[in-house]
Image (cartoon, rainbow, N blue to C red; front, side):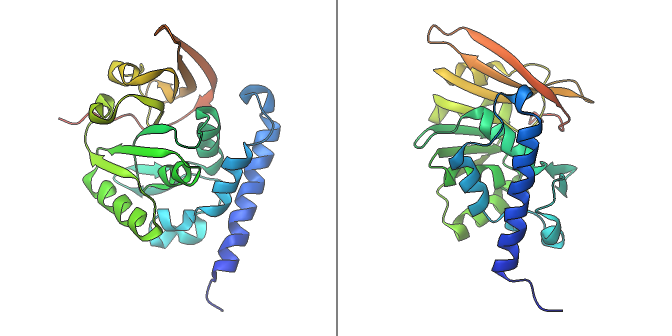
Length: 224
């Protein structure tokens, strides 16, 4: 068998994005749009997702399914990951805080869209692996190891906050570090099933939460 080439991987990536398009179309009433933002779609086509999974799973990286990445964690199903970024409404030069770096895929997509990304990861091995990937691929993303529920006060306030793990409630520190007019995308709920939610902060500082759809994420870890 011939070795896999970048052209082959680009075809897999295109197929992944076409499946994401289909999911958006089917769930359009729930999510408020029947297609991804063009800049998000472009970034999904550009970022090499296969480099953000364990090497043994490289050929599965473009399937529309979550994949294990170690430490009982997963990289999200491509559609759910894309949906979270669509709901986040990432704009060029926006300051984005990500809670839960994993191996760095979501952060890379946001950086590819022109955002200034700061990412907090509780698992040191993931943080180091993500930094290495960002360095090789040329993404200027700041990463630190720590308790994501506390945010990253030194770089606050943020225009957008993405939380890639579930919490019973939105951590108060994240709300405090969100710029008025900003938004948080987070799965809210218990251990089994959560509601993917958009939390918006008004100019006056009030908070409003909108539920989008049921999802299942691992729980947000709090460092000791």
